[in-house]
Length: 154
Image (tube, rainbow, N blue to C red):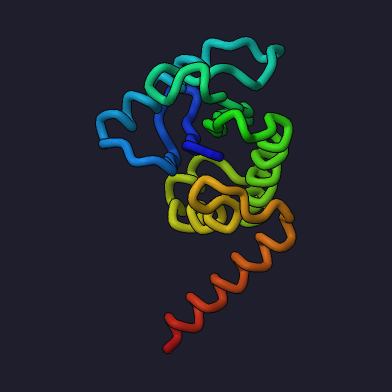
């Protein structure tokens, strides 16, 4: 099961955080800081899996991440999830963002946070993976955008 999805930039500023377990706000901020320190100090040529930090569950959980340009995409998962499956999910998420925003950048995540959360909700809900087909995700997001536009016209 996915415990948390975090996106932060090269300086550790969170751009998206979605926790599927309840933590108070201070603990969430500490988890984000700890995760950034664990992930950012690793070399580019090492494996993209590592043990979770002490705040997120220690050795019982894994951090699976990808670094694209200025952003880190980090999924914290338990031992029941496949590392390669989660890496593929990160790739699908990034490609979907790229198609929806036409060359996604950090500013898209800042100014369109609601749309990013909608895309993520099409893929993962309650820590469980729902959809990995990028075309299906984009179809659902487009349908939602059309519905929003029709409501604005009314």
